[in-house]
Image (cartoon, rainbow over all chains, first blue to last red; front, top):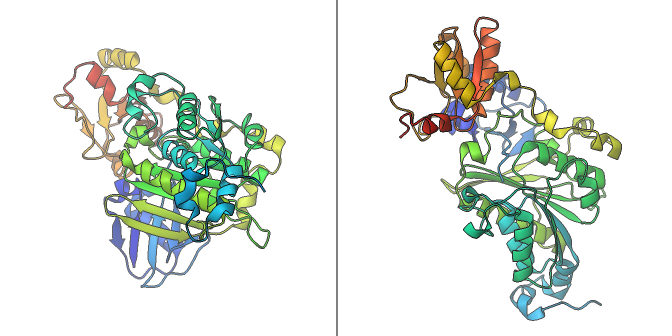
Length: 75
Length: 375
Protein backbone atom coordinates (compact mmCIF):
# COMPACT_ATOMS: atom_id res chain seq x y z
CA UNK A 1 0.00 0.00 0.00
CA UNK A 2 1.06 3.58 -0.61
CA UNK A 3 1.76 5.76 2.41
CA UNK A 4 2.06 9.50 1.76
CA UNK A 5 3.61 11.95 4.21
CA UNK A 6 2.74 15.62 4.41
CA UNK A 7 4.50 18.74 5.61
CA UNK A 8 7.42 18.53 8.05
CA UNK A 9 6.90 14.75 8.48
CA UNK A 10 8.92 14.36 5.29
CA UNK A 11 11.96 15.70 7.21
CA UNK A 12 11.74 12.52 9.26
CA UNK A 13 10.91 10.04 6.50
CA UNK A 14 13.14 11.62 3.85
CA UNK A 15 10.45 10.87 1.27
CA UNK A 16 6.89 11.94 0.52
CA UNK A 17 5.84 8.36 -0.16
CA UNK A 18 6.76 4.84 0.94
CA UNK A 19 5.26 1.52 -0.10
CA UNK A 20 4.66 -1.16 2.56
CA UNK A 21 2.93 -4.52 2.22
CA UNK A 22 1.10 -6.95 4.49
CA UNK A 23 0.04 -4.55 7.23
CA UNK A 24 -3.34 -5.57 8.68
CA UNK A 25 -4.48 -2.34 10.36
CA UNK A 26 -3.59 1.26 11.21
CA UNK A 27 -2.29 0.43 14.70
CA UNK A 28 0.25 -2.01 13.21
CA UNK A 29 1.09 0.56 10.55
CA UNK A 30 1.77 3.20 13.17
CA UNK A 31 4.07 0.77 15.08
CA UNK A 32 5.98 -0.20 11.94
CA UNK A 33 6.41 3.38 10.81
CA UNK A 34 7.59 4.49 14.25
CA UNK A 35 10.12 1.66 14.24
CA UNK A 36 11.35 2.60 10.77
CA UNK A 37 11.28 6.35 11.48
CA UNK A 38 11.77 6.90 15.25
CA UNK A 39 11.30 10.65 14.79
CA UNK A 40 7.58 10.01 14.22
CA UNK A 41 7.12 8.79 17.79
CA UNK A 42 6.61 12.18 19.34
CA UNK A 43 4.96 13.92 16.41
CA UNK A 44 1.26 14.61 16.20
CA UNK A 45 -0.41 13.56 12.97
CA UNK A 46 -3.69 12.20 11.75
CA UNK A 47 -3.92 9.07 9.61
CA UNK A 48 -6.30 8.95 6.67
CA UNK A 49 -7.22 5.77 4.82
CA UNK A 50 -8.71 6.17 1.37
CA UNK A 51 -9.22 9.88 2.04
CA UNK A 52 -11.04 9.42 5.33
CA UNK A 53 -9.60 10.27 8.74
CA UNK A 54 -9.38 7.29 11.09
CA UNK A 55 -9.15 7.97 14.81
CA UNK A 56 -9.58 4.38 16.07
CA UNK A 57 -7.80 1.29 14.73
CA UNK A 58 -8.98 0.57 11.17
CA UNK A 59 -8.34 -2.39 8.84
CA UNK A 60 -6.04 -1.93 5.85
CA UNK A 61 -5.98 -3.62 2.46
CA UNK A 62 -3.23 -3.86 -0.14
CA UNK A 63 -5.01 -1.24 -2.20
CA UNK A 64 -5.45 1.22 0.69
CA UNK A 65 -4.17 4.75 0.13
CA UNK A 66 -2.81 5.95 3.45
CA UNK A 67 -1.74 9.49 4.33
CA UNK A 68 -0.11 10.94 7.45
CA UNK A 69 -1.02 14.59 7.94
CA UNK A 70 0.49 16.81 10.62
CA UNK A 71 -1.10 20.07 11.76
CA UNK A 72 0.55 23.27 10.47
CA UNK A 73 0.79 26.35 12.62
CA UNK A 74 1.80 28.91 9.99
CA UNK A 75 -0.43 31.71 8.84
CA UNK B 1 -35.97 44.97 1.85
CA UNK B 2 -32.53 46.45 2.35
CA UNK B 3 -30.71 48.02 -0.57
CA UNK B 4 -27.31 46.94 -1.82
CA UNK B 5 -24.78 49.72 -1.24
CA UNK B 6 -22.64 50.45 -4.29
CA UNK B 7 -24.47 48.03 -6.54
CA UNK B 8 -22.33 48.78 -9.57
CA UNK B 9 -19.25 47.57 -7.78
CA UNK B 10 -20.67 44.06 -7.37
CA UNK B 11 -22.48 43.81 -10.71
CA UNK B 12 -20.14 41.14 -12.13
CA UNK B 13 -20.79 38.74 -9.27
CA UNK B 14 -24.47 39.58 -8.80
CA UNK B 15 -25.16 38.44 -12.38
CA UNK B 16 -23.71 35.00 -11.59
CA UNK B 17 -26.24 32.20 -11.78
CA UNK B 18 -27.37 31.36 -8.26
CA UNK B 19 -25.92 34.58 -6.81
CA UNK B 20 -28.18 37.55 -7.50
CA UNK B 21 -29.12 40.38 -5.16
CA UNK B 22 -30.12 38.10 -2.26
CA UNK B 23 -26.56 36.69 -2.00
CA UNK B 24 -25.06 40.18 -2.23
CA UNK B 25 -27.35 41.35 0.57
CA UNK B 26 -26.29 38.42 2.73
CA UNK B 27 -22.65 39.48 2.25
CA UNK B 28 -23.53 43.08 3.10
CA UNK B 29 -25.17 42.01 6.35
CA UNK B 30 -22.48 39.47 7.29
CA UNK B 31 -20.16 40.06 10.25
CA UNK B 32 -16.79 38.31 9.89
CA UNK B 33 -13.99 38.36 12.44
CA UNK B 34 -10.51 37.80 10.97
CA UNK B 35 -8.03 36.71 13.63
CA UNK B 36 -4.50 37.34 12.39
CA UNK B 37 -3.67 39.93 9.71
CA UNK B 38 -0.61 38.13 8.38
CA UNK B 39 -0.01 35.92 5.35
CA UNK B 40 -3.50 34.39 5.37
CA UNK B 41 -5.25 37.43 6.83
CA UNK B 42 -4.12 39.85 4.10
CA UNK B 43 -5.77 38.11 1.11
CA UNK B 44 -8.71 37.18 3.33
CA UNK B 45 -9.35 40.83 4.20
CA UNK B 46 -8.82 42.03 0.64
CA UNK B 47 -11.30 39.61 -0.88
CA UNK B 48 -13.93 39.82 1.87
CA UNK B 49 -13.96 43.61 1.58
CA UNK B 50 -13.87 43.54 -2.22
CA UNK B 51 -16.75 41.04 -2.33
CA UNK B 52 -18.91 43.31 -0.21
CA UNK B 53 -18.83 41.76 3.29
CA UNK B 54 -20.40 44.55 5.32
CA UNK B 55 -18.76 44.21 8.73
CA UNK B 56 -15.20 43.04 9.34
CA UNK B 57 -13.22 42.82 12.58
CA UNK B 58 -9.42 42.48 12.48
CA UNK B 59 -7.56 41.10 15.49
CA UNK B 60 -3.76 41.22 15.52
CA UNK B 61 -1.41 42.36 18.26
CA UNK B 62 1.69 42.26 16.05
CA UNK B 63 3.53 45.05 14.29
CA UNK B 64 4.77 44.99 10.71
CA UNK B 65 8.27 43.61 10.22
CA UNK B 66 10.27 43.77 7.01
CA UNK B 67 10.43 39.97 6.79
CA UNK B 68 6.60 39.91 6.68
CA UNK B 69 6.42 41.77 3.37
CA UNK B 70 7.10 38.85 1.00
CA UNK B 71 3.72 37.37 1.89
CA UNK B 72 1.70 39.98 3.83
CA UNK B 73 0.64 42.02 0.85
CA UNK B 74 -1.37 44.74 2.60
CA UNK B 75 1.80 46.27 4.01
CA UNK B 76 4.67 48.38 2.64
CA UNK B 77 8.15 49.16 3.96
CA UNK B 78 6.87 52.48 5.36
CA UNK B 79 4.57 50.48 7.70
CA UNK B 80 7.45 48.83 9.57
CA UNK B 81 6.84 48.91 13.31
CA UNK B 82 3.19 49.93 13.02
CA UNK B 83 0.17 47.92 14.17
CA UNK B 84 -0.94 45.36 11.58
CA UNK B 85 -4.58 45.54 12.68
CA UNK B 86 -4.67 49.34 12.35
CA UNK B 87 -2.95 49.46 8.96
CA UNK B 88 -4.99 46.57 7.57
CA UNK B 89 -8.18 48.32 8.73
CA UNK B 90 -7.12 51.56 6.99
CA UNK B 91 -6.37 49.73 3.73
CA UNK B 92 -9.65 47.80 3.84
CA UNK B 93 -11.63 51.03 4.39
CA UNK B 94 -9.86 52.56 1.39
CA UNK B 95 -10.76 49.54 -0.73
CA UNK B 96 -14.41 49.52 0.26
CA UNK B 97 -15.64 52.59 2.15
CA UNK B 98 -19.04 50.92 2.64
CA UNK B 99 -17.44 48.17 4.72
CA UNK B 100 -17.59 48.81 8.46
CA UNK B 101 -14.16 47.81 9.80
CA UNK B 102 -13.04 47.54 13.39
CA UNK B 103 -9.41 46.99 14.37
CA UNK B 104 -8.49 45.14 17.56
CA UNK B 105 -4.74 45.74 17.92
CA UNK B 106 -4.40 43.13 20.67
CA UNK B 107 -3.34 39.53 20.91
CA UNK B 108 -6.42 37.34 21.10
CA UNK B 109 -6.50 35.27 24.27
CA UNK B 110 -8.96 33.25 26.32
CA UNK B 111 -9.62 36.45 28.28
CA UNK B 112 -10.86 38.64 25.40
CA UNK B 113 -11.89 36.04 22.79
CA UNK B 114 -15.51 35.40 23.82
CA UNK B 115 -16.26 39.10 24.14
CA UNK B 116 -14.79 40.02 20.74
CA UNK B 117 -16.36 37.01 19.00
CA UNK B 118 -19.82 37.79 20.38
CA UNK B 119 -20.04 40.69 17.89
CA UNK B 120 -19.54 38.45 14.82
CA UNK B 121 -21.25 35.59 12.94
CA UNK B 122 -18.22 33.86 11.41
CA UNK B 123 -14.59 33.62 12.56
CA UNK B 124 -11.55 33.18 10.28
CA UNK B 125 -8.49 31.56 11.84
CA UNK B 126 -5.56 33.24 10.10
CA UNK B 127 -3.22 32.90 13.09
CA UNK B 128 0.33 31.60 13.20
CA UNK B 129 0.57 29.51 16.37
CA UNK B 130 -1.08 26.46 17.91
CA UNK B 131 -1.99 28.07 21.24
CA UNK B 132 -4.22 30.62 19.50
CA UNK B 133 -5.58 28.10 17.00
CA UNK B 134 -6.81 25.72 19.73
CA UNK B 135 -8.12 28.65 21.78
CA UNK B 136 -10.12 30.06 18.83
CA UNK B 137 -11.46 26.62 17.98
CA UNK B 138 -12.65 25.99 21.53
CA UNK B 139 -14.21 29.46 21.72
CA UNK B 140 -16.14 28.87 18.48
CA UNK B 141 -17.35 25.49 19.75
CA UNK B 142 -18.57 27.16 22.95
CA UNK B 143 -20.23 30.02 21.07
CA UNK B 144 -21.64 27.85 18.27
CA UNK B 145 -19.84 30.00 15.68
CA UNK B 146 -18.61 28.65 12.33
CA UNK B 147 -14.83 28.81 11.96
CA UNK B 148 -12.95 29.04 8.66
CA UNK B 149 -9.61 27.35 9.22
CA UNK B 150 -6.43 27.56 7.16
CA UNK B 151 -2.76 27.02 7.86
CA UNK B 152 0.47 26.87 5.88
CA UNK B 153 3.91 25.33 6.10
CA UNK B 154 6.68 25.87 3.54
CA UNK B 155 4.94 24.92 0.25
CA UNK B 156 1.77 23.29 1.67
CA UNK B 157 -1.53 24.46 3.04
CA UNK B 158 -4.71 23.15 4.69
CA UNK B 159 -8.24 24.58 4.53
CA UNK B 160 -11.53 23.53 6.13
CA UNK B 161 -14.73 24.90 7.69
CA UNK B 162 -15.33 23.90 11.30
CA UNK B 163 -18.38 23.89 13.53
CA UNK B 164 -21.00 24.62 10.89
CA UNK B 165 -24.63 23.94 11.77
CA UNK B 166 -25.92 21.16 9.54
CA UNK B 167 -29.44 20.84 8.08
CA UNK B 168 -30.13 18.16 10.73
CA UNK B 169 -29.28 20.68 13.47
CA UNK B 170 -25.98 19.02 14.46
CA UNK B 171 -22.66 20.87 14.33
CA UNK B 172 -20.00 19.68 11.89
CA UNK B 173 -16.55 18.52 13.01
CA UNK B 174 -13.86 20.92 14.18
CA UNK B 175 -10.10 21.27 14.72
CA UNK B 176 -9.98 18.78 17.59
CA UNK B 177 -11.76 16.16 15.48
CA UNK B 178 -8.76 16.36 13.17
CA UNK B 179 -5.94 17.07 15.62
CA UNK B 180 -7.27 16.35 19.12
CA UNK B 181 -4.55 18.02 21.18
CA UNK B 182 -2.00 20.76 20.59
CA UNK B 183 1.58 19.83 19.69
CA UNK B 184 4.28 20.93 22.11
CA UNK B 185 6.34 24.02 21.32
CA UNK B 186 9.04 23.10 18.83
CA UNK B 187 7.34 19.92 17.68
CA UNK B 188 6.08 21.56 14.49
CA UNK B 189 8.26 24.29 12.98
CA UNK B 190 6.44 27.58 12.28
CA UNK B 191 7.05 29.95 9.35
CA UNK B 192 9.91 31.73 11.16
CA UNK B 193 11.59 28.38 11.64
CA UNK B 194 10.65 26.41 8.53
CA UNK B 195 10.10 29.20 6.02
CA UNK B 196 7.10 29.73 3.73
CA UNK B 197 6.77 30.46 0.03
CA UNK B 198 5.39 34.00 -0.16
CA UNK B 199 2.57 33.26 -2.57
CA UNK B 200 1.37 30.19 -0.63
CA UNK B 201 -0.66 31.95 2.08
CA UNK B 202 -2.04 34.07 -0.79
CA UNK B 203 -3.45 30.92 -2.41
CA UNK B 204 -4.61 29.30 0.82
CA UNK B 205 -6.02 32.52 2.32
CA UNK B 206 -7.98 33.11 -0.87
CA UNK B 207 -9.40 29.58 -0.70
CA UNK B 208 -10.34 30.25 2.92
CA UNK B 209 -12.07 33.51 1.91
CA UNK B 210 -13.91 31.62 -0.84
CA UNK B 211 -15.29 29.18 1.74
CA UNK B 212 -16.53 32.07 3.90
CA UNK B 213 -18.25 33.67 0.91
CA UNK B 214 -19.85 30.29 0.04
CA UNK B 215 -20.96 29.82 3.61
CA UNK B 216 -22.56 33.28 3.81
CA UNK B 217 -24.30 33.10 0.44
CA UNK B 218 -25.20 29.41 0.52
CA UNK B 219 -23.50 28.82 -2.82
CA UNK B 220 -21.97 25.46 -3.73
CA UNK B 221 -20.73 22.85 -1.30
CA UNK B 222 -18.77 24.34 1.60
CA UNK B 223 -15.70 22.45 2.90
CA UNK B 224 -17.58 21.03 5.86
CA UNK B 225 -16.25 17.79 7.43
CA UNK B 226 -13.61 17.84 4.69
CA UNK B 227 -9.99 18.99 4.90
CA UNK B 228 -8.44 20.25 1.68
CA UNK B 229 -4.67 20.05 1.40
CA UNK B 230 -2.62 21.74 -1.30
CA UNK B 231 1.02 21.28 -2.22
CA UNK B 232 2.34 24.09 -4.42
CA UNK B 233 5.46 22.19 -5.49
CA UNK B 234 3.59 19.53 -7.45
CA UNK B 235 0.10 21.06 -7.64
CA UNK B 236 -1.30 18.20 -5.65
CA UNK B 237 -4.69 18.68 -4.01
CA UNK B 238 -6.16 16.13 -1.64
CA UNK B 239 -9.47 16.11 0.14
CA UNK B 240 -9.89 14.14 3.34
CA UNK B 241 -13.20 13.52 5.04
CA UNK B 242 -13.48 13.63 8.83
CA UNK B 243 -16.32 13.71 11.32
CA UNK B 244 -17.12 14.56 14.90
CA UNK B 245 -15.59 11.98 17.19
CA UNK B 246 -17.31 11.27 20.53
CA UNK B 247 -14.03 11.49 22.49
CA UNK B 248 -13.42 15.06 21.29
CA UNK B 249 -16.07 16.39 23.67
CA UNK B 250 -13.76 15.76 26.64
CA UNK B 251 -10.92 17.78 25.11
CA UNK B 252 -12.35 21.30 25.02
CA UNK B 253 -13.85 23.43 27.80
CA UNK B 254 -17.58 22.82 28.19
CA UNK B 255 -18.48 26.21 29.68
CA UNK B 256 -17.20 29.77 29.54
CA UNK B 257 -15.60 29.88 32.99
CA UNK B 258 -13.58 26.77 32.23
CA UNK B 259 -12.54 28.31 28.91
CA UNK B 260 -11.37 31.57 30.47
CA UNK B 261 -9.42 29.56 33.04
CA UNK B 262 -7.57 27.48 30.43
CA UNK B 263 -4.00 28.63 29.84
CA UNK B 264 -3.54 27.78 26.16
CA UNK B 265 0.01 29.12 26.09
CA UNK B 266 0.93 26.84 28.96
CA UNK B 267 -0.62 23.83 27.21
CA UNK B 268 1.71 24.42 24.26
CA UNK B 269 4.80 25.52 26.16
CA UNK B 270 6.07 23.24 28.86
CA UNK B 271 8.85 24.77 30.93
CA UNK B 272 12.12 24.16 29.13
CA UNK B 273 13.95 27.18 30.46
CA UNK B 274 16.65 25.03 32.08
CA UNK B 275 17.84 24.02 28.59
CA UNK B 276 17.85 27.47 26.97
CA UNK B 277 21.29 29.00 26.44
CA UNK B 278 21.61 32.70 25.59
CA UNK B 279 24.40 33.99 23.36
CA UNK B 280 26.41 35.40 26.28
CA UNK B 281 25.97 32.19 28.29
CA UNK B 282 27.28 30.26 25.28
CA UNK B 283 30.28 32.63 25.05
CA UNK B 284 31.08 31.86 28.68
CA UNK B 285 30.51 28.13 28.27
CA UNK B 286 32.86 27.93 25.28
CA UNK B 287 35.60 29.65 27.29
CA UNK B 288 35.18 27.34 30.26
CA UNK B 289 34.96 23.87 28.82
CA UNK B 290 34.93 21.78 25.71
CA UNK B 291 31.50 21.58 24.20
CA UNK B 292 30.07 19.50 21.38
CA UNK B 293 27.95 21.64 19.08
CA UNK B 294 25.23 20.03 16.96
CA UNK B 295 23.31 21.48 14.03
CA UNK B 296 19.86 19.83 13.94
CA UNK B 297 18.72 21.59 10.78
CA UNK B 298 17.75 19.49 7.77
CA UNK B 299 20.09 19.12 4.78
CA UNK B 300 19.80 22.13 2.49
CA UNK B 301 18.91 24.71 5.15
CA UNK B 302 20.97 27.88 4.88
CA UNK B 303 23.24 29.49 5.89
CA UNK B 304 25.73 26.70 6.42
CA UNK B 305 28.20 26.91 9.26
CA UNK B 306 31.77 26.45 8.00
CA UNK B 307 35.17 26.25 9.68
CA UNK B 308 33.63 25.72 13.08
CA UNK B 309 33.85 22.31 14.66
CA UNK B 310 30.33 20.91 14.88
CA UNK B 311 28.24 17.82 14.13
CA UNK B 312 25.34 17.78 11.70
CA UNK B 313 22.44 15.67 12.95
CA UNK B 314 19.08 16.68 11.41
CA UNK B 315 15.97 16.40 13.60
CA UNK B 316 14.59 13.71 11.31
CA UNK B 317 17.33 11.26 12.25
CA UNK B 318 18.31 12.60 15.67
CA UNK B 319 16.32 10.09 17.77
CA UNK B 320 18.02 7.13 16.12
CA UNK B 321 21.50 8.69 16.36
CA UNK B 322 21.48 10.02 19.92
CA UNK B 323 23.41 6.94 21.08
CA UNK B 324 26.35 7.97 18.86
CA UNK B 325 26.90 11.19 20.85
CA UNK B 326 29.53 11.34 23.56
CA UNK B 327 28.08 12.12 26.99
CA UNK B 328 29.54 15.60 27.39
CA UNK B 329 28.25 19.15 27.51
CA UNK B 330 26.22 19.52 24.33
CA UNK B 331 24.75 22.54 22.61
CA UNK B 332 22.13 22.10 19.89
CA UNK B 333 21.28 24.81 17.39
CA UNK B 334 18.85 25.29 14.47
CA UNK B 335 17.52 28.44 12.73
CA UNK B 336 15.78 30.10 15.67
CA UNK B 337 16.18 27.88 18.72
CA UNK B 338 12.84 26.10 18.48
CA UNK B 339 13.76 22.70 17.06
CA UNK B 340 17.03 22.70 18.97
CA UNK B 341 15.05 23.06 22.20
CA UNK B 342 13.17 19.91 21.32
CA UNK B 343 16.49 18.22 20.51
CA UNK B 344 17.85 19.31 23.90
CA UNK B 345 14.83 17.83 25.67
CA UNK B 346 15.36 14.52 23.86
CA UNK B 347 19.09 14.48 24.55
CA UNK B 348 18.51 15.36 28.22
CA UNK B 349 16.27 12.34 28.52
CA UNK B 350 18.92 10.22 26.77
CA UNK B 351 21.91 11.40 28.83
CA UNK B 352 20.14 11.70 32.14
CA UNK B 353 22.66 13.04 34.67
CA UNK B 354 25.66 12.10 32.51
CA UNK B 355 25.84 15.37 30.61
CA UNK B 356 24.39 18.86 30.45
CA UNK B 357 22.51 19.74 27.27
CA UNK B 358 21.44 23.11 25.92
CA UNK B 359 19.59 24.72 23.06
CA UNK B 360 21.19 27.84 21.62
CA UNK B 361 18.49 30.49 21.88
CA UNK B 362 19.57 32.56 18.87
CA UNK B 363 20.29 29.58 16.60
CA UNK B 364 22.51 30.07 13.57
CA UNK B 365 22.30 33.85 14.13
CA UNK B 366 24.75 33.44 17.02
CA UNK B 367 27.50 32.26 14.68
CA UNK B 368 26.62 34.92 12.13
CA UNK B 369 26.84 37.63 14.80
CA UNK B 370 30.23 36.29 15.87
CA UNK B 371 31.38 36.35 12.24
CA UNK B 372 31.97 32.64 12.38
CA UNK B 373 31.93 31.68 8.75
CA UNK B 374 28.31 31.27 7.80
CA UNK B 375 27.82 30.92 4.05
